[in-house]
Length: 112
Image (cartoon, rainbow, N blue to C red; front, side, top):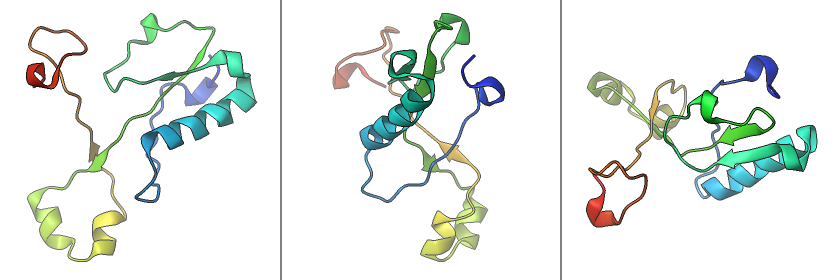
């Protein structure tokens, strides 16, 4: 694949608060388009788990999603300052809405 030993790896990027997901996506798209060629890179705009077998090997895929820090109750008690709540974090979560029918997309009233 395009990414060699980096294939399938996950990274967390810390950005300024006002940075939108689309801005980060475009920045990464440009970075890898410059490296692999614009016609060879695709962004996956879905935060669901991706089956590598479903991907076309002639493309380099990038999946970007929004995550939030995850803390156990004790960690919250121990992290008293704003700095401690935003640094040295090693667990994150993200949410993906789903529908009871199993469809990928649905109106807000159908999402769980």
